[in-house]
Figure 1: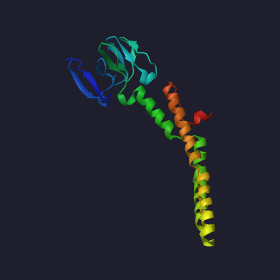
Figure 2: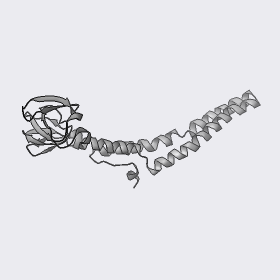
Figure 3: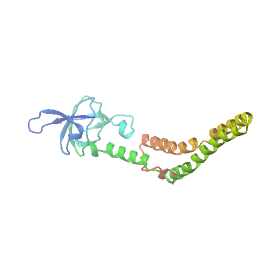
Figure 4: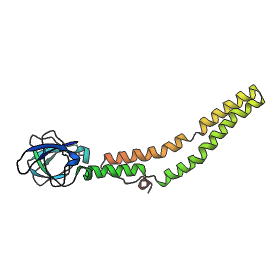
Length: 194
């Protein structure tokens, strides 16, 4: 969530702040239907909480004083929860998982690096070969030009490295996303190969 209902411990007054401005140890209110802005421990209230976006568990979980609640968990019960934050929104469990997933998507495995280096050499060769086939034949007449242009285009279409170059990162991205949905975080694509 972008906003947090912060409770002033002295006056009990509630102030709406940006979730990123909430410090560790701050008391926040999570009303029914609201999402918890930061990781924390419930101080007051008992309610059901939907953590499906975080844990993948489809059923709401009953939370009571002393229970840990994650950032992004939605209060699905009828009771307000008063939570003492244990982490900022930028350092919450969800934020850390997002960072791990982003790092996994940007770091390449050995196979991805091999495919990239192959494509850097292979693609210009195929492009040059196709251009030569499409242009040089015209020097020997119209019939030869048409024949070699058709063959040049067929060669470029068949030898195009795009499916090979795209398939490896797509496979890793799909595997990382599928495992994350099941609650398994894989730090880098290279661990999928091992």
